[in-house]
Amino acid sequence: MKEIVPPPPPIVRNQFESVRELFTRYVVPSYGRFELAFARGAGCHVWDVNGRRYLDLGGGIAVCALGHAHPEITQALIEQSKQLVHVSNLYYHEPQGRLAERIVKHLAPGKVFFCNSGAEANEGLFKLARKFGHDEGRFEILTAANSFHGRTLAGIAATGQEKVKKGFEPMVAGFRQVPFNDLAAMRDALSPATAAILIEGIQGEGGITPASPEYLLGLRALCDEKKLLLFIDGVQCGHFRTGRFQSFQRILEGVTGAEKFVPDGMSMAKSLGGGFPIGAFWVRDRHADLLGPGTHASTFGGTPLGCAVALKVIEVIERDGLAENARNLGEWLKGELQRLVNRYPSVLRSARGLGFMIGVEIAEKAAIPAFATSDKVAAMQLVNRLHEAGLLTIPSGSQVLRLLPPLNLTRAQAEEGIAILERVVRGLV
Ligand SMILES: Cc1ncc(COP(=O)(O)O)c(C=O)c1O
Image 1 (cartoon, rainbow, N blue to C red):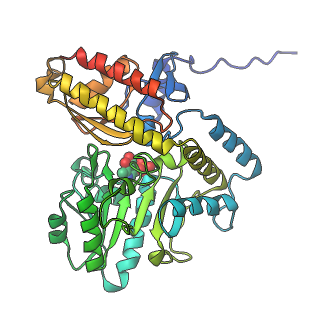
Image 2: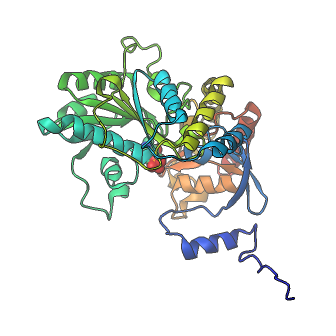
Image 3: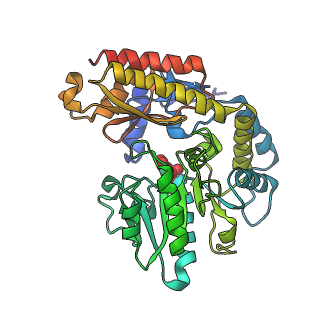
């Protein structure tokens, strides 16, 4: 009898070029990717397909709240997948109700809608605003310059960056951008059609710029006065990254008059599932029933599996004091980055941010001899050099390097990251 021999694997495993070749042939080239392919991770480290180890201070762009391959996430996935993975939103199930309860307890009285991504969470807020203003003919949503709210058609219309809109015009109607942290500009921009204002608590893609306490309080007062909804996009800056559940809670700590501050809606995703795709929006109690039966839906929104994982992520963050870790170690990191700024002012200009959402402003490309002749922006060049040195970070615009590490980063790992960064920066002086 003829022996059946399985065919050889179509790619040689563990080689970067063969992985990239698959992408070149079969994956839509909508991303500018780095020349790295990863095979596994553990805690705050990841290994590429060639077995090289990297410290991950980018956290998958603020997603991997508990790092990589966290055993309790693995366990939650296994246990829930043995029970019930999906049942649809035609029915009730406990994990979705429990997760909504946790979010409401951490935020303020209200209700939660579950979806799959940050863009989809914002879409839900946009629909909420439309419904809210509908009977008065109000539909417009004002957002901020330099903001980022996702890549759907409404997401790019809401986003305050021309580069995401280019080639996709005409934009979805009903969005306008005004300068960030400028209350007077927001007031001036209001029209009779305005229904809502949406801002990020801390602009992430726009270069790590926190909303000021005065701005948040001023927007709340303005929205109350004009009967508008105030939405905060917490997709990147949320989920305990700043030391509190949402960044507005951290920004307003100890600020007089802020005790009762509550937005009307908040979007979240990224860290919510610690790497499992799940998004959500929370809506304040007084508007919580605006989207009634049949008005909004998402097939995969809030599956038993996704919710069980998200519940586990919150449980571990609370049990292990990871919000405090992000707050304290984030302060330490920012202090160390400031030390590097002081020591190497020709390369690094400033360090800013809250908790584990930190931005380092890089000097103009022309001022750094090793960068001057390349057509790549300074942030990209620095990130590339850090890759070569074994450190993952995220560029933000042309001049900012972002650190969005897992919330369980240790002091030793933070020191490892700073040592690598210092070595690379010293080589650029
Ligand atoms: C503030 C903010 N909002 C929305 C999004 C979009 O999220 P997603 O990519 O999950 O759709 C992002 C993604 O980076 C973000 O940073």
